Image (tube, rainbow, N blue to C red; front, top):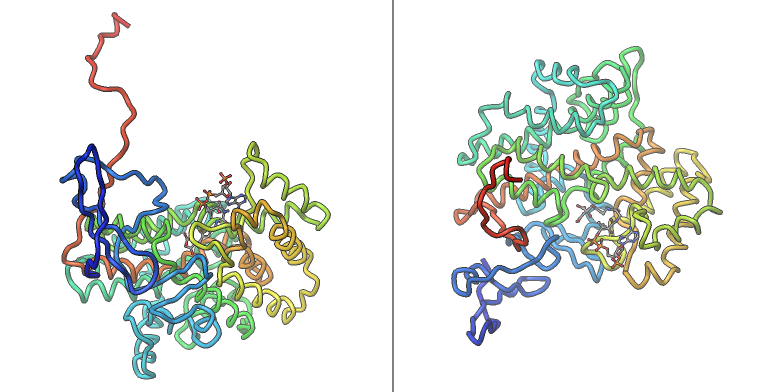
Length: 431
Ligand code: SDX
């Protein structure tokens, strides 16, 4: 915990309270209000947590004004350009870049845990074929706690480690199975001779009837998409995982809660919603109509893939994703993709519009990712499951950090109550 070097004074009804201030290694100072209710009998009020730090962490730092994203201090553009997803997983989990031997051991542990318990395959068959893959993932990941009892004791560091590896390793298999089930194709089992991204692509797109060769361009793009989505500080789904784990719930239940939260269109569901929006716009000439709707207070429509609670500058992930979109589409021979043209024109039109500029609304990580994923052959329903696969390491890293804190308390916010005060029950004959 940071040391308090100064304090703030708060005066309520003439009485003064000292609130300690902590200075972080980067980012804004933090005002410690933990004793406020006990001392002053008041709550703070911050629905949506726009000004609230829920924890201290050493994993990821975001400077929204500068458009900076660091994982254990390393800038995301360097990691996306020079590293690869499993190395970033190691960095997030253990705090440092691995040595060659450490990386080889980590990749081997993940690779050798990609297969699911055979009986789990029955879970998929209980869903309707048209179930959204996110519904399947919430169910199957939650059900992992019914199979892997030997890694649910969160007080045992070894079991925490095993659960972490199992989740990172098995999420691609679960997501691929969810996809295969919805299209009526047989499940493709993971292979140990493929890297993480290639294994996922093969499990999604291979069929037993013929060999499947992984396109290195696609596996590199897939790996980069995983890296860009790995972790992102205390976003809604990560906060959900932290809150669930504060009650002592097992890691599989906590990650299932994170998947459920990520599904929302304001969060991880935005990549699916964004591509559906771009397809609805269809042509460049319809962009002004949609810009006008996004600005209309009476219209609930928002530009999906635009805006961010923290970034009030470009999302650095969107920059890398945009470069990757150009590269992947060109290499796939999907030149002049009309939807990519619409996306680029929409971005330019929005950024030139005072409404978006004044509110500091820029493209976020979800704006371009869907274009790449669609070009790779994924249906829009698989976009958020892919986000969930990538973010599992972030959820797990944040879960591990929290669960190993001996001072951990259950998360239990209070409220501003505006309901009825106490009143007596009236019998129905008197109503
Ligand atoms: C992710 O938190 C994370 O880190 C998330 C994430 C991660 O990696 O985990 O980065 C992943 O979830 C990215 C965000 C994906 N969501 C979308 O693209 C959906 C569209 N964006 C918005 O719904 C919105 O921008 C949010 C939810 C992302 C952020 O919402 P905030 O911070 O609560 O901002 P707000 O809703 O208070 O909006 C501020 C103003 C409002 O106008 P006023 O009421 O002040 O007049 O900006 C407007 C909003 O109406 N606004 C938009 C807009 N986003 C905000 N107007 C039009 N289009 C938009 N997209």
